[in-house]
Image (cartoon, rainbow, N blue to C red):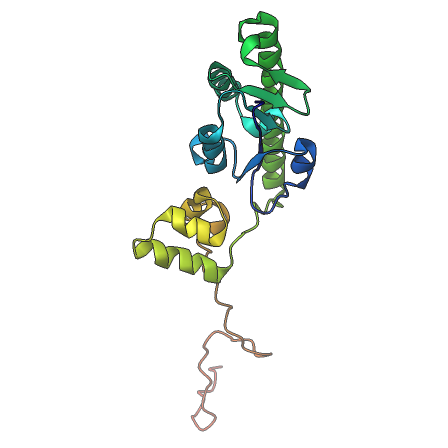
Amino acid sequence: MPGQIVGYARVSSTSQNLARQLEALGVVDELFTDHQSGKNRADRAGLSDALRYIRRGDTLRVASMDRLARSLIDLEQIVSDLTARKVSVEFVKERLTFTPDATADPFATFQRQLIGAVAELERSLIRERQREGIDLAKARGVYKGRARRLTDEQIAHVREAAAAGEPKAKIATNLGVSRRLIYDVLAGNGAYAAKPPTPRPPPSYGDEVPLPFTETPNPSESVEEPRH
């Protein structure tokens, strides 16, 4: 009996769309998804569920390598663990499939590592260009940082709920955001830093111009004639 095709798709935030990845995956028997950055594997509940669900003889199908892992080490670990469990891993974009029989093939391992290393280097270069752009924008005084994803009312709710002891993971789930964003709100990081107080405008005197105090002589008082 052939194994199942288990699909996995991931986007970095709830505002992004899975449609293109789902189209690339095609028809699958089971689908698992994440709306979460791939930086921390422990935060990807969908991937954890997929790895628990998948069985011997199944195939894990992913749209591209960078959707499964964000580092070469993470990619190697996931693929090696799955193939050791007699599970195949298919990457649609790269047109590569790693089967349990291919684990002993040094060329297949090299190919996977090479593509993963190139993808990791590309991400590093993108981050470097972003940092350079931010530094230039700050130097010009036009950098505004990331826009807030939460309203003032939601920010107040996050702080009140956390102060009341509600788990941060639950707060994040209720608002449809990541736990990292909740921590940023509570710590006042980035766009959620406390706003500086608005300076009070100087008092308005209309058209009057205040002058230094001078004593005006009383006309009724006698003025001493100058001596000749």
